[in-house]
Image 1 (cartoon, rainbow, N blue to C red):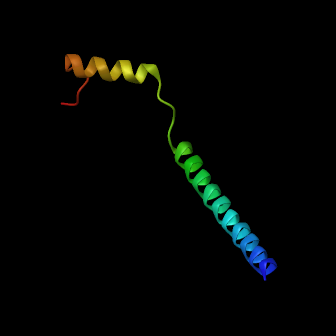
Image 2 (cartoon, rainbow, N blue to C red; image 1 turned 90 degrees about the vertical axis):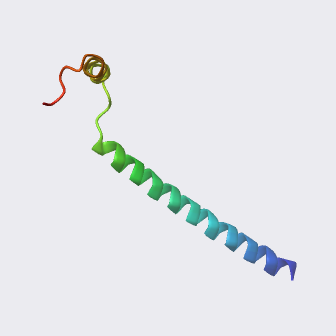
Image 3 (cartoon, rainbow, N blue to C red; image 1 turned 180 degrees about the vertical axis):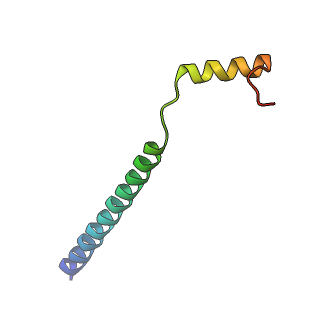
Length: 61
């Protein structure tokens, strides 16, 4: 009888690990897709935004 429980528990653990791996792969693919859509921020972007907000210049009329 303990052998049956051991077998069932091992199968449950194997299936659970497979499900967790699948979820991690899906999450990694989504993260890579999101990262591919965005370019990295540059320091010049930050400096330009600060100058526009402080002086009011560069804002659309």
